[in-house]
Image (cartoon, rainbow, N blue to C red; front, top):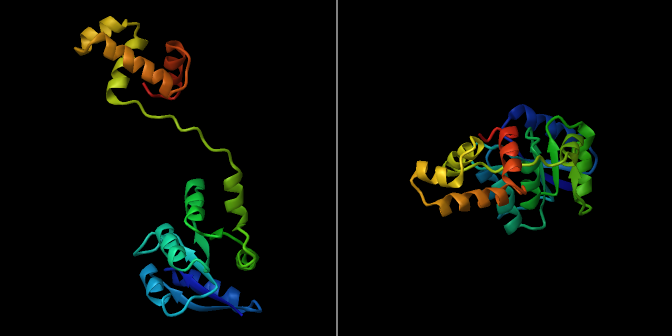
Length: 204
């Protein structure tokens, strides 16, 4: 018999998931907890095979809870259960030791398949989570510092390094240093490309 603990603070979700496991031969949800700390208090006395764990709990962050459980009880398999479909959250949960990630819009069979899959030491993602992970990462444009923005605006206005230095009451070498740093920061070859990127990305 596969023993499962459920950590979920919404009673309707809890009852629904427990009902799914009750109908499944060889699976039994023996304990459910609304709080992460209640789970932590129980585990020293008994450990299940699998924990299905919500990420958003009233007392602790499910991502942190996953890490705490896996550090003390590495043999327990953890499946994340969440409405959060952000790639970064999914990856962080997996990095902290989860073996699966299921969105709450998952079909009933997906929850059962997840338990069976993780017990085979494989990872499992519901269809929605899997589709999210397949999406390409969005390029993140670093923000300009206040001083960089001041200088870049003046460069875009056609001012020379010397003129900018005089207006900002700094040494011309400081302005030149900021210009070079911005070229490197945004991986562009020249000032024209830097200004174009800044306008396109609405940095100025």
